Length: 427
Ligand code: EPU
Picture 1 (cartoon, rainbow, N blue to C red):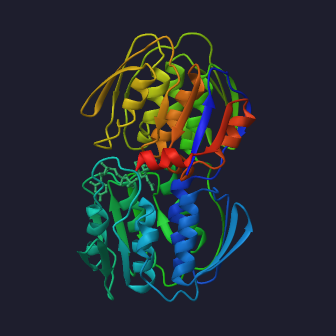
Picture 2 (cartoon, rainbow, N blue to C red):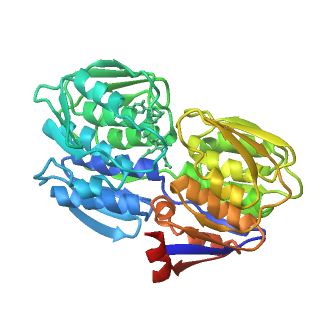
């Protein structure tokens, strides 16, 4: 068990290179199940969610070969099992993508109820609505979800809520299913478009990804491909906020500036300087920042995954900010940790009112989930004194080499083993 030890109060300076997008990778890896032949997937982030996805593929019977630490060759030709091992599917939310991919290829799939960050209820009714519209039956028993249907067909599906997972899962199931599938009220996140681009490289016929309506003409055969995953929008945004929160000056490289617009716009409104280049953004801040009103929404709205990070930034802005969480019911659990650091934040349901304070001070902290954990790292980097953050496994699920990347920006941060005595007390 590891913790991060962070001595804050130093402005970050230099360059950081963003890794591949986690939320694209965890759908593209299951997508290789649909391909007859080898897929080479590049720019995979070396994070634990990707390692779990690769392990699931391997346990199902795929040949998985590491070409370098961010590139894997995957051959799913001889997959023998359609059941994802329980202990692996419970480790991450995205194991639900194996339902769509296995259903699309074999007409059946069984996956344990997925794990992942605890952000309040995380139903998958819209995923199941899409599968049943295509002719599958679903059963949920003893924590296992089974979907099966030997005569799948295209369908017209109108989602009741905009869901990233349901949109991508329906695309996976539909691209090798006979007939035309039309998905309406879909998610438009960059990773939805990336999955569609990857499936199209395999020979799928998907049109409209990135708009409200996606049309998929089922094809008989998908083949292997070489595909490079897009840069991670949220990882990039996290380093942008870290630069601003520490009043530093950082060039964030390997990004698609268009994907960052909702984040850049809010940072600029707060008084942060954001300069866009072809595939990088430079972020710098000095002095006082202005408060903001933010409501998280599906893309192209302000992303919920950036909400904890923006709250940290606004904790030391001059004035009152209002942050409205529009996607998840319970995404302010980290606020208690910020209060320990001297922040002045009141949460009422899905709204946080942040009264800016002069500065944050160090405290012992606990990461409750992935983005909350990243936000606490940024809070600790900007605070005076030495903070320790526990349960950093949540953070390493989604950020490749976060400690090393911050060290390269001049941060005083290192990993340390949690002493046995602390572990005993925690239990
Ligand atoms: N929803 C339903 N029914 C469904 C599916 C979703 O009611 O069948 C609701 C959810 O309860 C939520 C809203 O719809 O209120 C949006 O959920 P969505 O399905 O879009 O979320 P997700 O696919 O489970 C992905 C990301 C999350 C990110 C959300 C929103 C992955 C693996 N996870 O989750 O990322 O917060 O989209 O953008 O792609 C993270 O990376 O830290 C993370 C939590």
